[in-house]
Length: 177
Image 1 (tube, rainbow, N blue to C red):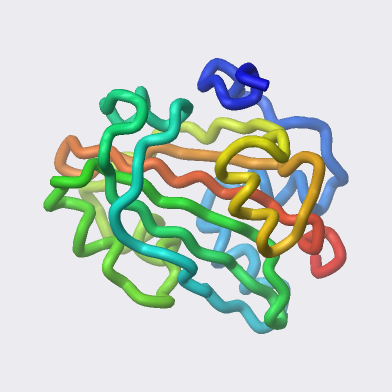
Image 2 (cartoon, rainbow, N blue to C red; image 1 turned 60 degrees about the vertical axis):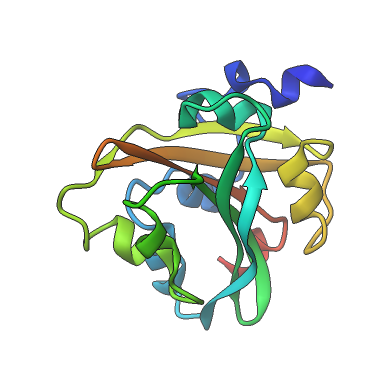
């Protein structure tokens, strides 16, 4: 289903969702801090970090052709050891601005993106219900399968270089809010 992968499907308005999940999806500040505020044990589990390829719906945002080499970090955000968010941070493969930021082990990227980089510019959030066949949904399904995943993404610019952060909300999140 090509339309579900097409960048044109990312919208400024979020999809209709239950209130607690919608509140997290539209959180204007750090999602990590929002999840931590609920009082549950929060952790970041790094799944993979390194060479990857630009997905069709990422390429334009990163000023790359589809399939171009890039650097990506894939993580699960967990509450009480239960995966609740799958996230992919992607940047140009040769980007000196973002490499030190992404080399953080299990430390939350949100802590840096929302406070530690005064020169950082954040663009507006965009939203989509990702079909289970989207490449990121396929990866998220390893933690928890769903027909669709509420997702948000945001492009950040540091020294003129883009980083695209895409977060997929897993079904377990609604039970832990």
